[in-house]
Length: 269
Ligand code: HPA
Image (cartoon, rainbow, N blue to C red; front, top):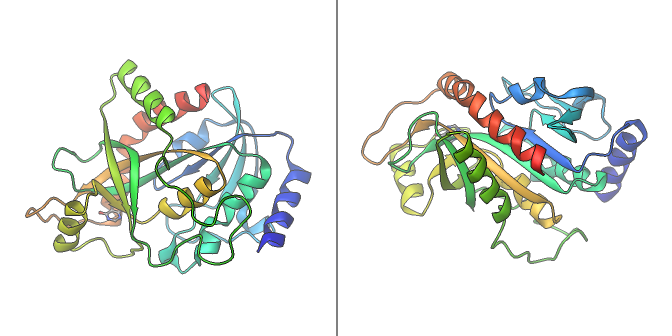
């Protein structure tokens, strides 16, 4: 595994003309930020040695390098979900590569179902913490020398970055919520009983990504910041049906505000 990571990182380094310290994972329906990257050059996942290839609808699958907010950045357009059948090693492979490339800060976005009764569809939730409900741990197996065998998880989502995001939101009059993201494997959305359970266990929103990547980033000492777009609601005793299309529509509608916060976060990073 380590050799594969090295091989992929070397392949990219040989071709990279910039040296980004900031990476972004562009989640469901959040592609707008990609269109703002200037001086860009990119690699299809299918051309990068050892890189898994993304299949899910709405994800095209490439690494984009360039400038955003005056900073050199790299962006993942298309991520690997556990529900697609990838192993946890595959899902988190790009993060290991990012570490080898010298990435220091990671911005992640995703879509999720809100369980906190104060949330509305289209809200942005700054992820303050998570609960890992994936059936396999991304750090299972031989420990990587990037971090300890038993990593502390008290500040998985960087407090300084959260504070900065709050400031940016306030300056721009953007409503942001804070909350705990519950990571589940999917691909089913939750039953009413499951939404209720995850809420009672301390979750504010539930989704099918992010947690594996963030755990590995944290293990690599990469500072992480995440925002979730609340695309549907699973409120206790108020079951509402949800579809993938609906999730994409809500994500697209919230996109401009999310982009504004992320762009400014990156500029200040
Ligand atoms: N549950 C899980 N994943 C999701 C949801 C949800 O309600 N909405 C968007 N992704």
